[in-house]
Length: 138
Image (cartoon, rainbow, N blue to C red; front, top):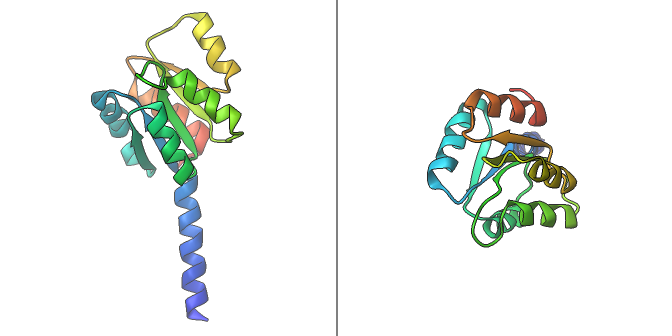
């Protein structure tokens, strides 16, 4: 009986971790670090990927409650990642970080299913607010 209670508690905690897992995708180590610093004290499990392709590998192994991605990356860029997420019918909301503020870029991201669009340089308070609104508060 005690074993079942412990197992049930583990499963609940495991689900909660999954529900609070965020994938950070950017080819820049510095920018991934900045995003991590902004979100690390919010109780999220943070996973990093340095490209769209490596992000897809992470997505195959784990469910995320939110994906925060750059657009401009070598190999598979953020647009390609958004397209793959849409193609695979994945439900994790995607927050796009980019210095490109053109309306056409914003519209294309929205068409590919992006949930939010944050301009670089990223304001940590804005990032926390957007992610919290998507994932849910602490």
